[in-house]
Amino acid sequence: MKLSGIRVIDLSLFLPGPHLTMLMADHGAEVIKLEPPGEGEPVRHVGASQAGHTVWFRNTHRGKKSISLNLKHPAEREALLKLIDTADVVVEGFRPGTVEKLGIDYATVSKRNPRIVYCSISAFGQTGPKRSKPAHDLAIQADSGVVSLNLGSDGKPTHPNMPVADMAGSLMALSGILMALLRRDNPKNGTGQGDYLDISMQDSLLSWTPNVMGIPFAEGRAPEVKQQRSFGGGSFYNIYETADARFLVLGGSEHKFVANLLAALGRTDLIAAGSTPPGPSHEPVKAFLRDTFKTKPLAEWTTFLDGVDVCWAPVRDLYSATLEPHLAARDTIHTDADGAKHLNNPIKFANEPAQPDWRLPSVDEHTEQLTGFKK
Image (cartoon, rainbow, N blue to C red; front, top):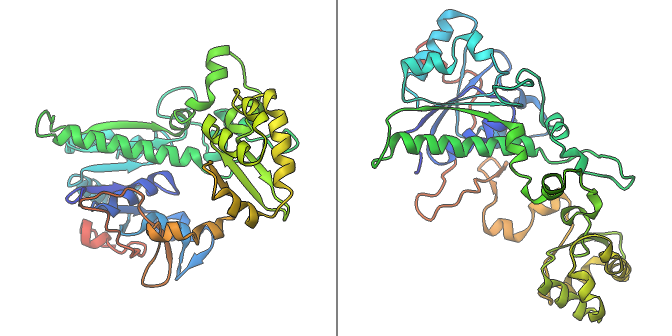
């Protein structure tokens, strides 16, 4: 597999770090998770469980090994450092300054192991006025202006339901780690040296916003959210209710989709308005589509729209979405031998595809085996 022979020490908790190291484990890396003494990784105890483990833990920690050490004790800290001496990657998610206090920071580690790729993931990064400010996903989204884009029907900000700051941080960290490993070991120009990555979840989140930064960057003001393409300003990038109180979305505003659907609905006179930039010019088209979609139940619209070349989808609940035959065909939702479900690895190679190990470690299971430290 692509990452066979790579040893990763995961010092992170919750979502960003554990998610990225799980993806690495699925592709052959040996991932060793440091868990807090006692109850271990917090998400072992958060949310619904299946086959003896929480779904959250199952979908971020499969295939890993577990060690548990108290880093405030010199002997246990040294046991971890000796393990890091043999590693390729360290991922940590402590608040900036903590690893220095613990004596496991990049400066300390890299003196012992110059080949180490050391990745710090934090809310706001290792530098800047907010470096020490605590924050999880929601606060980062709010501080970055993203919550302001999620408006309810009352026009007020509402709770964003996806942890995009966490996941942006996870994927940016994964990308950076793989770049650093490639630079270190590239047979053409490899340096043989590791590197340090300072991954800010806020930086990562904002890097995902080029499609909504037009007004702030070009005009120096906040956008009028509901007039923007991605947030309801366009008639063909919008949500519509059907006669049975279900919903569907039109999700593609290219001219060909506008023309195809409006022609099929007998309203070619609206094609020009539906093809304009998002904003007030779309109101007549939205009104027509709102009224039209409310005349039939979703099942009838499904039959009709499947015969039209238009970008659309039904609004499914999360459970129904997991039952989709298309996802089953791609093994996107995998059921293991215990009957527990996993979100499978989405990185699909033609050669050496992921081979997830669906097993889960118990807290402290591998400490003595991997470190030699006896408690």
